[in-house]
Amino acid sequence: MIEEERKEETTVQQVQDSTPKRPVLLMVLCILTFAGSGVNFISSLFIAVFFEPFLRFAEEIGKSFNLPGMDLLKNARPVFFVFSAAVYSTALAGAMMMWRLRRTGFHIYTISQILIIMAPMYFLHLPGPSVLDVILSGTFVILYSTNLKIMS
Image (cartoon, rainbow, N blue to C red; front, side):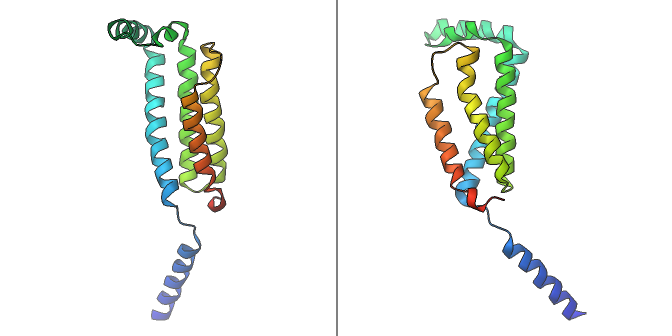
């Protein structure tokens, strides 16, 4: 009886030892993605649902505080925010897969980041991507890619 329990413990320990550990960098990146993409998903969905009141509110805020770029929202349509919510939810799904050490999650996340960068150019008719978006997304994709070797 005792020998059987020891064999079971040994087998469980061997399985646990063979499972790759999630690196700290990957955990930090995933947590930051959960927070950032989660907030953007919720806010995009909220704006899409309450688009007209949001537009009026944004116009008032833009006038009161003289904020640059608020006039871009005049060109926006609810479909832009619906699309953004969908893309951010896809980025979240990719991060969840990477949290579980799934390589497919990296590819899903990367495609989502490309769409996030390109969406404003299509929907808001901007001449080019936001440099800040390119730098931030590119940094995350590069850092995530350093963990591909442990993902299956």
